Length: 168
Image (cartoon, rainbow, N blue to C red; front, side):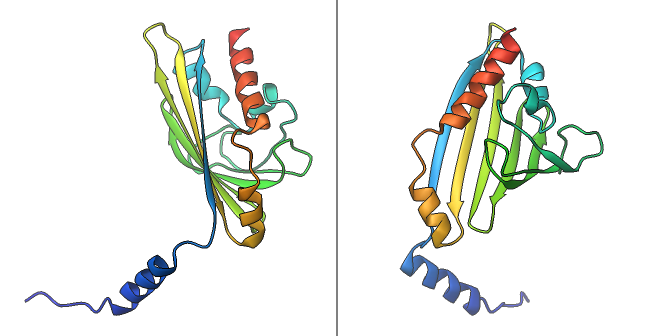
């Protein structure tokens, strides 16, 4: 006989949340770019160490990596001096030449989930899609997320830097 489990507490918590709706804000930005290089070349550049070669103002402190480059579960930090500002970054998905995912915390007020997918085109170029989901963690984060532009000039400049680096 199958045991019946009491899920009353979790159902109450979920119903209460759904009744009130989320209090924290979220914003999504998506960027797509065709790059005149194959997925292997593009993917190898999506690395906290290598990004200083093509992102103006990029600096990252490696906290955990066995290779010094991007890898599964790699952890690094950007500081106030980085154009992207301070944050703790953790690789959550690492599928070479196809896709990667990184979660970034910004202080204790926001989380950014960055997902990048690469697809090879018939002409041996790559189309990259950058999907950023910003989620506030408190009222300070709500203000930050609310004031984000539709497109980040820093992020667009970074993608342009990648395109130029791989074109040369």
